[in-house]
Length: 404
Image 1 (cartoon, rainbow, N blue to C red):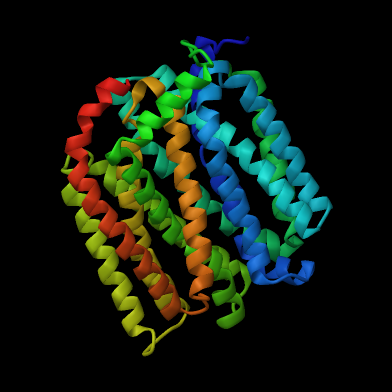
Image 2 (image 1 turned 135 degrees about the horizontal axis):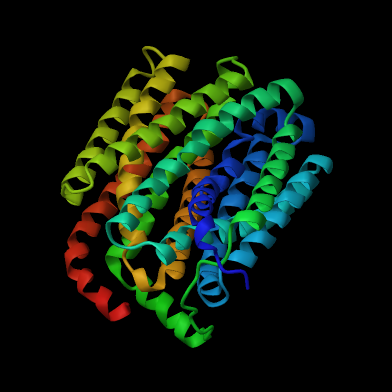
């Protein structure tokens, strides 16, 4: 077992931060290519959207099991194997353009991404504590938001210049480069291995999921992220097919969406010491007002600028909420960091994938008005859940020392 060397700790930490957005890159880089993929593969828009949903669901459900595996067997070797498999499957998608092959490869990629990202989140809990750990955790959603900023922007240009397959060639090359750097500079960060006992693991999972504020927090961040994914799924078809713009324009719109998420996270980090209930409640109120304005003005003026303008505001508020509740969930059970990290990411991805795909297709989102209706429906659900979260937060916090 190769232990992380002290002189490599700094660069290894940078690598860990850089790998956290890999799931977002794997999700977002080919968003501008969805219409082109549908045409090239002779399938419906819903069929190519499903490749994204299967990936996200795979990431989510994998994390239910991955946390305990990482806590028992370590992070390093599993991360290396996962990067290698992710690279190979990316090249397979590019070389074998068949929708069912793509589905299978995306499911495998979801598992490997879960192993990588959960391990890297737990890496920080392994090595840091106190205010330094809180500082890194508050950076997670900000850094993670880099992917929605950069990936579709880059993907739009790749699509325009080389076609949709170039996105997957890029993912394969990027993960291969990370694999080489990990081999040189990284190592095992886990110091205290947990015995792999199924009964004990099941009790830990059950205890965490029975903690109402933790579970409600997971559902809240899942639906918040689902609102973003509804836009990601529908915007390429609205912008390219309905409004008549190019894939590059879709990339720019997704860049602004991702930048908005990051901005919300940065604002949340600057307000880290303020009351959670007050600041999150205010952000939900702002989101609802903006969505109502988006719906009410759609019949008067609906174009690229109004669409993106409202989305910027909605996603800033969403990134703010996500950063706060995400950090709350990650730090709820510090002695089972791998399991908590796995559950947090897993439930979030599962809920966001299901809600986004269902609501995007339930409302057949093809306009600003229908996007607003879908978002409003999700906001009503998540606002009710937040009110319940407030009720249970103080009540259930006493369970934390028992579980830890």
